[in-house]
Image (cartoon, rainbow, N blue to C red; front, side, top):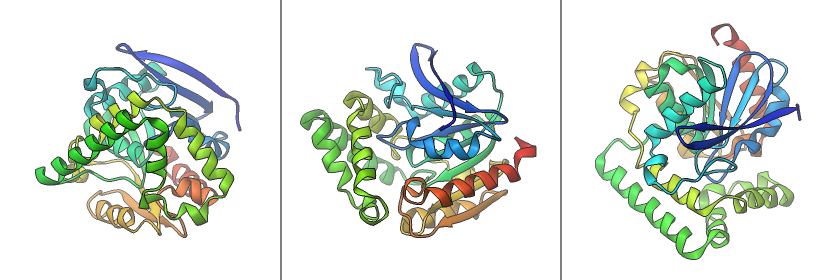
Length: 280
């Protein structure tokens, strides 16, 4: 892995952890729920010769802060904090790559703070739910998850979370050692931070931006694993309305394609970034 410089930067009272590596145009990397910036280590090897990677621990995750106030986890607040973080690191704009929660967040950055985005890579992401009923149902489901976490504790929650159908493909695509490493990473999280993330940055709590995708004017790569049929379909739907976009699905991978088929994912990301480098 290339040498990384770790920093904890305070943004209006919130500590955000970021690891910087490589050189060249900046690329912000945003992980999924229960993850951290460390999950991008294999990608850094591929990008570091040509790009500056900024792997961020989202609020409530990893080594970033886990504030008590629910307001600090609101998606719009998180978006503004990330834009401020980018500026604090000395960059006006960057390419943003996000997976799942991180993908939703990166898309929200592109919609609400377009001035800080030069390109966008979304893995297993969604613009949210279009109707108030759908959003309310998801908010209720995420509140139940947060309460479960607070009531039963982190280890029991991780046991439950790892058993949901979203991860079924990983029984075949990941080794026992890889699944054990995922579990260790999840058990290293702070329960209050995860609960806050569920309440403030969940798919129901965030703005629906499906009606604003046509205003995204940067190059966009949308990807998902072919075994993740729901998010493959969402990627195609978004590509139909984002002007400068392409869909590239990764064979024999589920929701976490970057973990399940890292060589294919990393090559896809690098080729895209190299192709748009002149616009970064």
